[in-house]
Length: 210
Image 1 (tube, one colour):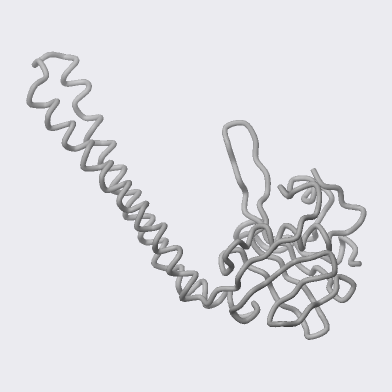
Image 2: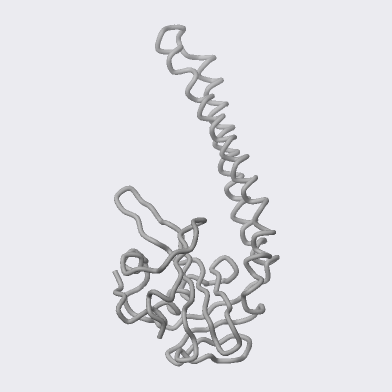
C-alpha cells in the first residue's frame, strides 16, 4: 500500500502537494467501510444534472429579487414620509440588486461546467455501473482487487458551517494494472459513497480517520 509521501493532495484549485496526516485528519468520511454502488455518467449527463440544479437556483434568486423589489415599491407607496422611511427604503432595492448579481454570477460559473466536465472525464472510466465491495472495485464488467490498486492523488473541496470546517473528497486518482484513472464525484451518480469507500480501503495504514 502506498505511503503518505507517495500521494498527492489537492485542495480546491490549489497546486498539488504531499498528502499529510493532518490532511487525512480533516477529511470527512465514515469511520467504517461500507459497500457502495453508483453509475459513471457521460459529461453530457453530468452537465444535465448540474443544469437542473442550476435552474432551481435561478428560480430562487429570480423570485427572491422580484419579491424584494416589489416589497420595496409597496413600502415606498404606503410608508409614512418620515426619517425611518428614508432610512429603510434603500435596503429592499440593494438586497434585490445583490440577488440579481448572484443570479448572474452563478449562471456565468455554470456556463463553464460542460467544458470542465469533458476535461475531467478524460481519465475516468467509461459510462456504466460502478461498485465497491470488500474484494475490490468493479467497473466495465471487471473487478480490480484492492491489492492491485494504489492511491495517487486525493482531491477535496472545503466544507464550512458556522462553527467548523472539513474536507470533502470529490476526486480520487488511482493506479491499477491498466494504468492510472480517476473517480470523480461530479461525473458519477451516487459518487460520494463510492469515493469515500475507495479512500477507506486504499488510505495509508498510518493515517487515522477523524
